[in-house]
Length: 602
Image (cartoon, one colour):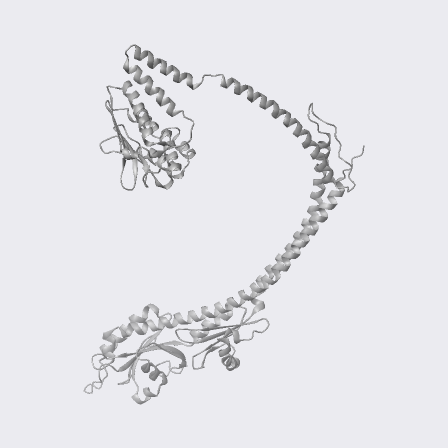
Protein backbone atom coordinates (compact mmCIF):
# COMPACT_ATOMS: atom_id res chain seq x y z
CA UNK A 1 0.00 0.00 0.00
CA UNK A 2 1.42 3.36 -0.97
CA UNK A 3 2.02 5.76 1.89
CA UNK A 4 -0.03 8.94 1.95
CA UNK A 5 2.92 10.77 3.40
CA UNK A 6 4.72 13.02 0.89
CA UNK A 7 7.69 15.02 2.09
CA UNK A 8 7.50 17.36 -0.92
CA UNK A 9 4.26 18.96 0.30
CA UNK A 10 5.52 19.69 3.81
CA UNK A 11 8.75 21.00 2.30
CA UNK A 12 6.85 23.53 0.20
CA UNK A 13 4.64 24.54 3.12
CA UNK A 14 7.55 25.05 5.51
CA UNK A 15 9.61 26.95 2.92
CA UNK A 16 6.69 29.23 2.11
CA UNK A 17 5.86 29.83 5.77
CA UNK A 18 9.44 30.59 6.79
CA UNK A 19 10.00 32.76 3.74
CA UNK A 20 6.94 34.90 4.42
CA UNK A 21 7.90 35.16 8.07
CA UNK A 22 11.42 36.31 7.27
CA UNK A 23 10.19 38.86 4.74
CA UNK A 24 7.72 40.23 7.30
CA UNK A 25 10.44 40.46 9.93
CA UNK A 26 12.83 42.20 7.53
CA UNK A 27 10.14 44.70 6.53
CA UNK A 28 9.22 45.31 10.17
CA UNK A 29 12.86 45.94 11.05
CA UNK A 30 13.19 48.45 8.24
CA UNK A 31 9.98 50.24 9.27
CA UNK A 32 11.17 50.48 12.88
CA UNK A 33 14.84 51.24 12.24
CA UNK A 34 14.47 53.92 9.56
CA UNK A 35 12.60 56.61 11.57
CA UNK A 36 14.44 55.70 14.74
CA UNK A 37 17.86 56.05 13.14
CA UNK A 38 16.79 59.28 11.42
CA UNK A 39 15.81 60.79 14.75
CA UNK A 40 18.99 59.53 16.40
CA UNK A 41 21.07 60.95 13.55
CA UNK A 42 19.50 64.40 13.93
CA UNK A 43 20.02 64.38 17.69
CA UNK A 44 23.56 63.06 17.36
CA UNK A 45 24.59 65.61 14.74
CA UNK A 46 23.16 68.50 16.74
CA UNK A 47 24.90 67.23 19.85
CA UNK A 48 28.19 66.93 17.94
CA UNK A 49 28.09 70.55 16.76
CA UNK A 50 26.96 71.86 20.16
CA UNK A 51 29.72 69.91 21.88
CA UNK A 52 32.29 71.35 19.46
CA UNK A 53 31.15 74.89 20.32
CA UNK A 54 31.44 74.11 24.03
CA UNK A 55 34.89 72.57 23.49
CA UNK A 56 36.18 75.65 21.66
CA UNK A 57 34.74 77.87 24.37
CA UNK A 58 36.46 75.76 27.02
CA UNK A 59 39.80 76.01 25.22
CA UNK A 60 39.51 79.80 24.99
CA UNK A 61 38.55 80.03 28.67
CA UNK A 62 41.48 77.82 29.63
CA UNK A 63 43.85 80.14 27.79
CA UNK A 64 42.34 83.22 29.45
CA UNK A 65 42.53 81.60 32.91
CA UNK A 66 46.20 80.90 32.34
CA UNK A 67 46.78 84.57 31.51
CA UNK A 68 44.79 85.64 34.56
CA UNK A 69 46.88 83.33 36.77
CA UNK A 70 49.97 85.30 35.78
CA UNK A 71 48.32 88.60 36.77
CA UNK A 72 47.47 87.15 40.18
CA UNK A 73 51.03 85.99 40.77
CA UNK A 74 52.34 89.47 40.05
CA UNK A 75 49.78 91.17 42.29
CA UNK A 76 50.57 88.75 45.12
CA UNK A 77 54.24 89.81 44.97
CA UNK A 78 54.48 92.76 47.38
CA UNK A 79 58.04 93.52 46.32
CA UNK A 80 57.08 94.03 42.67
CA UNK A 81 53.95 96.04 43.48
CA UNK A 82 55.67 98.35 45.98
CA UNK A 83 58.60 98.96 43.64
CA UNK A 84 56.40 99.83 40.67
CA UNK A 85 54.21 102.14 42.75
CA UNK A 86 57.19 103.98 44.32
CA UNK A 87 56.83 107.79 43.89
CA UNK A 88 58.90 109.66 41.34
CA UNK A 89 62.37 110.66 42.61
CA UNK A 90 62.80 114.29 41.55
CA UNK A 91 66.43 114.51 42.82
CA UNK A 92 67.68 111.69 40.67
CA UNK A 93 65.22 112.29 37.86
CA UNK A 94 64.65 108.52 37.69
CA UNK A 95 61.51 106.55 38.38
CA UNK A 96 63.58 103.82 40.00
CA UNK A 97 67.23 102.77 40.10
CA UNK A 98 68.55 100.60 37.30
CA UNK A 99 69.33 97.67 39.58
CA UNK A 100 65.77 97.77 40.91
CA UNK A 101 64.35 97.81 37.39
CA UNK A 102 66.47 94.77 36.57
CA UNK A 103 65.31 93.08 39.75
CA UNK A 104 61.65 93.66 38.83
CA UNK A 105 62.23 92.45 35.28
CA UNK A 106 63.91 89.31 36.61
CA UNK A 107 61.02 88.70 39.03
CA UNK A 108 58.49 89.13 36.25
CA UNK A 109 60.45 86.83 33.98
CA UNK A 110 60.70 84.17 36.70
CA UNK A 111 56.90 84.24 36.98
CA UNK A 112 56.49 84.06 33.22
CA UNK A 113 59.23 81.49 32.49
CA UNK A 114 57.22 78.25 33.06
CA UNK A 115 54.56 79.43 30.60
CA UNK A 116 56.59 81.53 28.21
CA UNK A 117 55.82 79.14 25.34
CA UNK A 118 52.16 80.19 25.63
CA UNK A 119 52.20 83.68 27.21
CA UNK A 120 55.34 85.60 26.25
CA UNK A 121 54.98 88.90 28.10
CA UNK A 122 53.89 90.55 31.37
CA UNK A 123 53.38 94.33 31.64
CA UNK A 124 52.91 96.55 34.72
CA UNK A 125 51.57 100.11 34.49
CA UNK A 126 51.56 102.80 37.20
CA UNK A 127 48.63 105.01 36.22
CA UNK A 128 49.75 107.81 38.60
CA UNK A 129 53.33 108.16 37.41
CA UNK A 130 53.06 106.72 33.91
CA UNK A 131 55.81 104.21 34.66
CA UNK A 132 55.46 101.16 32.41
CA UNK A 133 57.60 98.02 32.76
CA UNK A 134 57.45 95.01 30.44
CA UNK A 135 59.25 91.66 30.84
CA UNK A 136 59.30 88.60 28.61
CA UNK A 137 60.36 88.06 25.03
CA UNK A 138 60.72 91.85 24.78
CA UNK A 139 61.66 93.64 28.04
CA UNK A 140 61.76 97.41 28.40
CA UNK A 141 60.75 100.36 30.60
CA UNK A 142 59.14 103.54 29.47
CA UNK A 143 57.12 106.46 30.80
CA UNK A 144 53.76 107.42 29.34
CA UNK A 145 52.01 110.73 29.77
CA UNK A 146 49.20 110.55 32.31
CA UNK A 147 46.85 112.24 29.83
CA UNK A 148 47.70 109.67 27.21
CA UNK A 149 47.08 106.79 29.65
CA UNK A 150 43.68 108.17 30.61
CA UNK A 151 42.61 108.06 26.95
CA UNK A 152 43.07 104.31 26.71
CA UNK A 153 39.64 102.77 27.09
CA UNK A 154 40.92 99.40 28.33
CA UNK A 155 42.86 101.13 31.14
CA UNK A 156 39.70 102.81 32.40
CA UNK A 157 37.74 99.54 32.16
CA UNK A 158 40.42 97.71 34.16
CA UNK A 159 40.50 100.36 36.90
CA UNK A 160 36.68 100.36 37.02
CA UNK A 161 36.69 96.58 37.55
CA UNK A 162 38.16 97.19 41.05
CA UNK A 163 40.65 94.35 41.01
CA UNK A 164 38.53 91.86 39.10
CA UNK A 165 39.74 90.20 35.92
CA UNK A 166 39.22 92.32 32.83
CA UNK A 167 39.40 90.66 29.41
CA UNK A 168 40.35 93.05 26.62
CA UNK A 169 39.24 91.84 23.16
CA UNK A 170 41.68 91.99 20.23
CA UNK A 171 43.07 95.51 19.79
CA UNK A 172 46.16 97.28 18.49
CA UNK A 173 49.07 97.28 20.95
CA UNK A 174 49.78 100.91 21.82
CA UNK A 175 53.34 100.84 23.19
CA UNK A 176 56.49 98.83 23.36
CA UNK A 177 58.70 97.31 20.71
CA UNK A 178 55.74 95.47 19.17
CA UNK A 179 53.34 98.38 19.08
CA UNK A 180 50.92 98.25 16.20
CA UNK A 181 50.33 94.48 16.29
CA UNK A 182 46.92 92.96 17.11
CA UNK A 183 46.74 91.48 20.58
CA UNK A 184 44.18 90.46 23.19
CA UNK A 185 44.99 90.63 26.88
CA UNK A 186 43.90 89.98 30.44
CA UNK A 187 44.44 92.72 33.04
CA UNK A 188 43.83 93.37 36.74
CA UNK A 189 44.11 96.57 38.76
CA UNK A 190 45.88 96.63 42.13
CA UNK A 191 46.25 99.05 45.07
CA UNK A 192 49.12 100.63 46.93
CA UNK A 193 48.05 99.51 50.39
CA UNK A 194 50.82 101.45 52.10
CA UNK A 195 49.44 104.84 51.04
CA UNK A 196 45.79 104.69 50.00
CA UNK A 197 43.11 102.32 48.80
CA UNK A 198 42.80 103.59 45.22
CA UNK A 199 43.56 101.31 42.30
CA UNK A 200 46.62 102.94 40.76
CA UNK A 201 48.41 100.02 39.09
CA UNK A 202 47.54 97.56 36.33
CA UNK A 203 49.04 94.17 35.50
CA UNK A 204 48.47 93.17 31.88
CA UNK A 205 49.27 89.87 30.15
CA UNK A 206 49.03 90.49 26.39
CA UNK A 207 48.90 87.71 23.80
CA UNK A 208 49.17 87.76 20.04
CA UNK A 209 45.83 87.72 18.25
CA UNK A 210 47.20 84.90 16.09
CA UNK A 211 46.66 82.50 19.02
CA UNK A 212 42.88 82.89 18.70
CA UNK A 213 43.05 82.60 14.93
CA UNK A 214 45.04 79.38 15.20
CA UNK A 215 42.63 77.96 17.79
CA UNK A 216 39.53 78.61 15.68
CA UNK A 217 41.35 77.71 12.48
CA UNK A 218 42.38 74.30 13.83
CA UNK A 219 38.73 73.62 14.70
CA UNK A 220 37.85 74.27 11.04
CA UNK A 221 40.64 72.02 9.77
CA UNK A 222 40.06 69.13 12.18
CA UNK A 223 36.28 69.04 11.65
CA UNK A 224 35.50 68.92 7.97
CA UNK A 225 31.77 69.29 8.61
CA UNK A 226 32.24 72.83 10.05
CA UNK A 227 31.51 75.50 7.46
CA UNK A 228 31.75 78.74 9.45
CA UNK A 229 32.89 79.90 12.90
CA UNK A 230 32.25 83.31 14.45
CA UNK A 231 33.17 84.68 17.87
CA UNK A 232 31.71 87.94 19.21
CA UNK A 233 32.47 90.03 22.31
CA UNK A 234 29.59 91.11 24.58
CA UNK A 235 29.56 94.55 22.93
CA UNK A 236 29.12 92.94 19.50
CA UNK A 237 32.68 93.41 18.29
CA UNK A 238 34.11 90.57 16.22
CA UNK A 239 36.73 88.43 17.97
CA UNK A 240 37.04 85.96 15.09
CA UNK A 241 35.21 85.40 11.81
CA UNK A 242 36.00 82.66 9.31
CA UNK A 243 33.91 84.64 6.79
CA UNK A 244 34.40 88.32 7.64
CA UNK A 245 31.81 89.54 5.15
CA UNK A 246 29.04 87.58 6.92
CA UNK A 247 29.96 88.54 10.49
CA UNK A 248 27.36 91.31 10.67
CA UNK A 249 24.57 88.99 9.55
CA UNK A 250 25.43 86.36 12.12
CA UNK A 251 25.75 88.99 14.84
CA UNK A 252 22.14 89.94 14.16
CA UNK A 253 21.16 86.27 14.56
CA UNK A 254 22.61 86.01 18.09
CA UNK A 255 19.27 86.58 19.92
CA UNK A 256 17.61 83.74 18.03
CA UNK A 257 20.63 81.43 18.36
CA UNK A 258 20.70 81.86 22.13
CA UNK A 259 17.10 80.60 22.13
CA UNK A 260 17.09 77.34 20.11
CA UNK A 261 13.27 77.20 20.03
CA UNK A 262 13.13 80.53 18.23
CA UNK A 263 15.69 79.53 15.57
CA UNK A 264 14.37 77.99 12.40
CA UNK A 265 16.58 75.14 11.31
CA UNK A 266 17.44 74.94 7.63
CA UNK A 267 17.70 71.74 5.61
CA UNK A 268 21.09 69.96 6.04
CA UNK A 269 22.35 72.93 8.08
CA UNK A 270 23.04 72.96 11.81
CA UNK A 271 23.73 75.98 13.99
CA UNK A 272 25.35 75.79 17.43
CA UNK A 273 25.67 78.59 19.97
CA UNK A 274 27.78 78.75 23.14
CA UNK A 275 28.54 81.60 25.54
CA UNK A 276 31.48 81.63 27.94
CA UNK A 277 30.73 82.20 31.61
CA UNK A 278 34.23 83.65 31.99
CA UNK A 279 34.66 86.07 29.09
CA UNK A 280 31.01 86.21 27.94
CA UNK A 281 32.29 85.78 24.39
CA UNK A 282 29.70 84.20 22.11
CA UNK A 283 30.65 81.46 19.64
CA UNK A 284 28.50 80.54 16.63
CA UNK A 285 29.18 77.47 14.48
CA UNK A 286 27.48 76.52 11.24
CA UNK A 287 27.92 72.91 10.09
CA UNK A 288 26.79 70.67 7.25
CA UNK A 289 24.63 67.89 8.72
CA UNK A 290 25.15 65.58 5.76
CA UNK A 291 28.91 65.56 6.36
CA UNK A 292 28.42 64.75 10.04
CA UNK A 293 25.99 61.94 9.31
CA UNK A 294 27.81 60.45 6.36
CA UNK A 295 29.73 57.78 8.38
CA UNK A 296 26.60 56.82 10.33
CA UNK A 297 24.46 56.91 7.17
CA UNK A 298 26.86 54.46 5.55
CA UNK A 299 26.45 52.17 8.55
CA UNK A 300 22.64 52.38 8.24
CA UNK A 301 22.74 51.59 4.56
CA UNK A 302 25.01 48.65 5.31
CA UNK A 303 22.60 47.39 7.99
CA UNK A 304 19.60 47.67 5.65
CA UNK A 305 21.46 45.89 2.86
CA UNK A 306 22.60 43.21 5.27
CA UNK A 307 19.01 42.64 6.43
CA UNK A 308 17.82 42.24 2.86
CA UNK A 309 20.64 39.87 1.94
CA UNK A 310 20.14 37.91 5.18
CA UNK A 311 16.41 37.56 4.44
CA UNK A 312 17.12 36.20 0.95
CA UNK A 313 19.75 33.79 2.24
CA UNK A 314 17.43 32.69 5.05
CA UNK A 315 14.65 31.95 2.56
CA UNK A 316 16.99 29.78 0.51
CA UNK A 317 18.23 27.99 3.59
CA UNK A 318 14.67 27.47 4.85
CA UNK A 319 13.80 25.69 1.61
CA UNK A 320 16.85 23.45 1.97
CA UNK A 321 16.30 22.66 5.65
CA UNK A 322 12.59 22.06 5.18
CA UNK A 323 13.54 19.41 2.64
CA UNK A 324 15.88 17.84 5.17
CA UNK A 325 13.18 18.07 7.83
CA UNK A 326 10.52 16.33 5.79
CA UNK A 327 12.60 13.18 5.32
CA UNK A 328 12.98 12.28 9.02
CA UNK A 329 9.30 13.12 9.60
CA UNK A 330 8.37 10.54 7.00
CA UNK A 331 10.65 8.01 8.68
CA UNK A 332 9.14 8.77 12.08
CA UNK A 333 5.67 8.29 10.65
CA UNK A 334 6.56 4.92 9.21
CA UNK A 335 8.30 3.79 12.41
CA UNK A 336 5.39 4.74 14.65
CA UNK A 337 2.88 3.23 12.24
CA UNK A 338 4.58 -0.18 12.47
CA UNK A 339 5.53 -0.05 16.16
CA UNK A 340 3.91 -2.71 18.40
CA UNK A 341 4.33 -3.49 22.08
CA UNK A 342 5.05 -7.12 22.94
CA UNK A 343 2.06 -9.24 24.04
CA UNK A 344 -0.34 -6.31 24.06
CA UNK A 345 0.09 -4.83 20.58
CA UNK A 346 -2.83 -4.07 18.35
CA UNK A 347 -2.51 -3.69 14.60
CA UNK A 348 -3.92 -0.23 14.13
CA UNK A 349 -3.70 1.91 11.06
CA UNK A 350 -4.06 5.68 10.84
CA UNK A 351 -7.56 6.78 9.94
CA UNK A 352 -8.06 8.16 6.51
CA UNK A 353 -7.52 11.88 6.26
CA UNK A 354 -8.90 14.02 3.49
CA UNK A 355 -6.76 17.09 4.32
CA UNK A 356 -3.52 15.58 3.08
CA UNK A 357 -1.67 17.08 6.06
CA UNK A 358 1.24 14.83 6.98
CA UNK A 359 1.41 16.22 10.52
CA UNK A 360 -2.19 15.10 11.18
CA UNK A 361 -1.31 11.60 10.01
CA UNK A 362 1.71 11.67 12.29
CA UNK A 363 -0.51 12.74 15.19
CA UNK A 364 -2.97 9.86 14.59
CA UNK A 365 -0.16 7.33 14.57
CA UNK A 366 1.28 8.80 17.74
CA UNK A 367 -2.14 8.57 19.45
CA UNK A 368 -2.33 4.88 18.63
CA UNK A 369 1.16 4.35 20.02
CA UNK A 370 0.24 6.18 23.22
CA UNK A 371 -2.84 3.97 23.61
CA UNK A 372 -0.74 0.84 23.37
CA UNK A 373 1.92 2.19 25.73
CA UNK A 374 -0.75 3.21 28.23
CA UNK A 375 -2.14 -0.31 28.31
CA UNK A 376 1.32 -1.77 28.79
CA UNK A 377 2.17 0.70 31.57
CA UNK A 378 -1.06 -0.09 33.40
CA UNK A 379 -0.25 -3.77 33.33
CA UNK A 380 3.29 -3.07 34.60
CA UNK A 381 1.91 -0.85 37.37
CA UNK A 382 -0.47 -3.61 38.48
CA UNK A 383 2.39 -6.07 38.69
CA UNK A 384 4.49 -3.56 40.66
CA UNK A 385 1.65 -2.97 43.11
CA UNK A 386 1.36 -6.66 43.81
CA UNK A 387 5.08 -6.88 44.41
CA UNK A 388 5.00 -3.94 46.87
CA UNK A 389 2.09 -5.49 48.75
CA UNK A 390 4.06 -8.70 49.13
CA UNK A 391 7.08 -6.82 50.48
CA UNK A 392 4.90 -4.89 52.91
CA UNK A 393 3.48 -8.11 54.31
CA UNK A 394 7.02 -9.41 54.78
CA UNK A 395 8.04 -6.24 56.63
CA UNK A 396 5.03 -6.43 58.93
CA UNK A 397 6.07 -9.90 59.93
CA UNK A 398 9.44 -8.66 61.16
CA UNK A 399 10.28 -7.72 64.77
CA UNK A 400 7.91 -5.10 66.26
CA UNK A 401 9.36 -2.39 68.54
CA UNK A 402 7.01 -3.58 71.26
CA UNK A 403 9.06 -6.74 71.39
CA UNK A 404 12.07 -4.63 72.48
CA UNK A 405 10.04 -2.75 75.09
CA UNK A 406 8.71 -6.03 76.54
CA UNK A 407 12.23 -7.46 76.60
CA UNK A 408 13.55 -4.45 78.54
CA UNK A 409 10.62 -4.80 80.97
CA UNK A 410 11.48 -8.50 81.47
CA UNK A 411 15.17 -7.63 82.12
CA UNK A 412 14.13 -5.01 84.67
CA UNK A 413 11.81 -7.51 86.45
CA UNK A 414 14.58 -10.12 86.56
CA UNK A 415 17.02 -7.53 87.93
CA UNK A 416 14.57 -6.45 90.63
CA UNK A 417 13.95 -10.10 91.56
CA UNK A 418 17.69 -10.74 91.92
CA UNK A 419 18.25 -7.47 93.76
CA UNK A 420 20.45 -5.90 91.05
CA UNK A 421 19.30 -2.28 91.16
CA UNK A 422 21.90 -1.00 88.66
CA UNK A 423 20.75 -3.32 85.89
CA UNK A 424 17.13 -2.48 86.69
CA UNK A 425 17.88 1.26 86.50
CA UNK A 426 19.79 0.93 83.21
CA UNK A 427 17.07 -1.23 81.65
CA UNK A 428 14.35 1.20 82.68
CA UNK A 429 16.36 4.24 81.49
CA UNK A 430 17.22 2.61 78.14
CA UNK A 431 13.59 1.54 77.55
CA UNK A 432 12.29 5.05 78.30
CA UNK A 433 14.99 6.69 76.17
CA UNK A 434 14.27 4.33 73.28
CA UNK A 435 10.54 5.09 73.37
CA UNK A 436 11.31 8.82 73.39
CA UNK A 437 13.87 8.73 70.57
CA UNK A 438 11.94 6.58 68.05
CA UNK A 439 8.62 8.35 68.45
CA UNK A 440 7.23 9.15 64.97
CA UNK A 441 5.19 12.23 65.92
CA UNK A 442 6.40 15.51 64.41
CA UNK A 443 4.82 17.65 67.12
CA UNK A 444 7.23 19.65 69.32
CA UNK A 445 8.15 18.44 72.80
CA UNK A 446 8.99 20.51 75.88
CA UNK A 447 12.28 21.49 77.42
CA UNK A 448 11.26 19.45 80.45
CA UNK A 449 11.00 16.30 78.28
CA UNK A 450 14.34 17.04 76.63
CA UNK A 451 16.05 17.58 79.98
CA UNK A 452 14.54 14.31 81.29
CA UNK A 453 15.84 12.42 78.23
CA UNK A 454 19.19 14.13 78.74
CA UNK A 455 19.24 12.94 82.36
CA UNK A 456 18.47 9.33 81.30
CA UNK A 457 21.25 9.40 78.72
CA UNK A 458 23.81 10.77 81.18
CA UNK A 459 22.71 8.26 83.82
CA UNK A 460 23.48 5.42 81.41
CA UNK A 461 26.83 6.98 80.39
CA UNK A 462 27.70 7.42 84.07
CA UNK A 463 27.30 3.68 84.59
CA UNK A 464 29.78 3.13 81.75
CA UNK A 465 32.34 5.76 82.87
CA UNK A 466 31.65 6.20 86.56
CA UNK A 467 35.30 6.78 87.45
CA UNK A 468 35.76 9.48 84.79
CA UNK A 469 32.44 11.23 84.31
CA UNK A 470 30.83 13.86 86.51
CA UNK A 471 27.84 15.92 85.40
CA UNK A 472 25.29 18.43 86.61
CA UNK A 473 21.84 19.26 85.20
CA UNK A 474 19.74 22.27 86.16
CA UNK A 475 16.65 23.90 84.67
CA UNK A 476 14.63 27.00 85.41
CA UNK A 477 11.16 25.65 86.39
CA UNK A 478 9.48 28.26 84.17
CA UNK A 479 11.09 26.67 81.10
CA UNK A 480 9.65 23.22 81.70
CA UNK A 481 6.74 23.62 79.26
CA UNK A 482 8.61 25.68 76.64
CA UNK A 483 8.21 23.89 73.23
CA UNK A 484 11.28 22.77 71.28
CA UNK A 485 11.98 20.21 68.53
CA UNK A 486 12.49 16.61 69.67
CA UNK A 487 16.00 15.22 70.32
CA UNK A 488 18.04 18.46 70.31
CA UNK A 489 20.16 17.73 73.42
CA UNK A 490 21.23 14.10 73.04
CA UNK A 491 23.21 14.71 69.76
CA UNK A 492 25.12 17.50 71.54
CA UNK A 493 25.91 15.22 74.49
CA UNK A 494 26.99 12.43 72.15
CA UNK A 495 29.30 14.92 70.40
CA UNK A 496 31.04 15.57 73.75
CA UNK A 497 31.76 11.85 74.26
CA UNK A 498 32.65 11.18 70.64
CA UNK A 499 34.89 14.19 69.90
CA UNK A 500 35.43 16.21 73.07
CA UNK A 501 36.65 13.78 75.72
CA UNK A 502 39.86 12.51 74.16
CA UNK A 503 42.83 13.74 76.17
CA UNK A 504 41.30 14.33 79.61
CA UNK A 505 41.16 11.72 82.38
CA UNK A 506 38.31 13.46 84.17
CA UNK A 507 35.19 14.33 82.14
CA UNK A 508 32.97 17.18 83.33
CA UNK A 509 29.60 18.08 81.84
CA UNK A 510 27.29 20.91 82.89
CA UNK A 511 23.82 21.25 81.33
CA UNK A 512 21.72 24.31 82.24
CA UNK A 513 18.42 25.73 80.98
CA UNK A 514 18.16 29.40 81.97
CA UNK A 515 16.16 32.48 80.96
CA UNK A 516 16.22 36.23 81.38
CA UNK A 517 13.73 38.99 80.58
CA UNK A 518 13.94 38.70 76.80
CA UNK A 519 15.45 35.28 75.95
CA UNK A 520 16.17 31.75 77.10
CA UNK A 521 18.83 29.23 76.20
CA UNK A 522 20.21 25.81 77.09
CA UNK A 523 23.98 25.66 77.63
CA UNK A 524 26.19 22.56 77.47
CA UNK A 525 29.68 23.08 78.90
CA UNK A 526 32.47 20.48 78.84
CA UNK A 527 36.17 20.32 79.58
CA UNK A 528 37.11 18.52 76.34
CA UNK A 529 39.46 19.51 73.51
CA UNK A 530 37.10 22.11 72.02
CA UNK A 531 36.55 22.88 68.32
CA UNK A 532 38.88 24.11 65.60
CA UNK A 533 38.02 27.58 64.19
CA UNK A 534 37.28 26.04 60.75
CA UNK A 535 34.74 23.61 62.19
CA UNK A 536 33.00 26.43 64.10
CA UNK A 537 32.83 28.56 60.94
CA UNK A 538 31.47 25.67 58.85
CA UNK A 539 28.78 24.87 61.40
CA UNK A 540 27.70 28.51 61.76
CA UNK A 541 27.60 29.00 57.99
CA UNK A 542 25.52 25.87 57.45
CA UNK A 543 22.98 26.96 60.09
CA UNK A 544 22.78 30.57 58.86
CA UNK A 545 22.29 29.50 55.22
CA UNK A 546 19.90 26.64 56.14
CA UNK A 547 21.93 24.33 53.92
CA UNK A 548 23.24 20.92 55.04
CA UNK A 549 24.76 19.77 51.73
CA UNK A 550 27.46 22.52 51.44
CA UNK A 551 28.58 21.66 54.99
CA UNK A 552 28.91 17.99 54.10
CA UNK A 553 30.98 18.98 51.06
CA UNK A 554 33.35 20.95 53.30
CA UNK A 555 33.52 18.82 56.47
CA UNK A 556 32.18 15.38 55.56
CA UNK A 557 30.08 13.80 58.32
CA UNK A 558 32.10 15.24 61.21
CA UNK A 559 29.88 17.05 63.76
CA UNK A 560 26.86 16.38 61.52
CA UNK A 561 24.75 16.09 64.68
CA UNK A 562 25.55 19.69 65.66
CA UNK A 563 24.58 20.98 62.21
CA UNK A 564 21.38 18.93 62.23
CA UNK A 565 20.34 20.32 65.63
CA UNK A 566 21.14 23.89 64.52
CA UNK A 567 19.11 23.55 61.31
CA UNK A 568 16.09 22.09 63.12
CA UNK A 569 16.21 24.90 65.68
CA UNK A 570 16.62 27.44 62.82
CA UNK A 571 13.49 26.18 61.06
CA UNK A 572 11.59 26.20 64.37
CA UNK A 573 12.62 29.62 65.75
CA UNK A 574 13.71 31.44 62.55
CA UNK A 575 15.69 34.64 63.03
CA UNK A 576 15.05 34.53 66.81
CA UNK A 577 17.38 31.54 67.14
CA UNK A 578 20.30 31.60 69.57
CA UNK A 579 22.93 29.11 68.36
CA UNK A 580 26.50 29.71 69.47
CA UNK A 581 29.65 27.59 69.76
CA UNK A 582 32.79 28.84 71.46
CA UNK A 583 35.99 27.53 72.98
CA UNK A 584 36.53 28.39 76.66
CA UNK A 585 39.78 30.03 77.84
CA UNK A 586 40.26 27.41 80.55
CA UNK A 587 39.71 24.59 78.01
CA UNK A 588 36.69 22.82 76.69
CA UNK A 589 33.74 24.28 74.83
CA UNK A 590 30.36 25.91 75.39
CA UNK A 591 27.31 25.38 73.18
CA UNK A 592 24.23 27.55 73.62
CA UNK A 593 20.89 27.21 71.81
CA UNK A 594 17.63 28.98 72.51
CA UNK A 595 15.42 31.88 71.43
CA UNK A 596 15.70 35.68 71.70
CA UNK A 597 11.98 36.25 72.27
CA UNK A 598 11.39 34.15 75.32
CA UNK A 599 9.07 31.14 75.60
CA UNK A 600 6.50 30.20 72.96
CA UNK A 601 3.51 28.03 73.86
CA UNK A 602 1.61 28.12 70.52
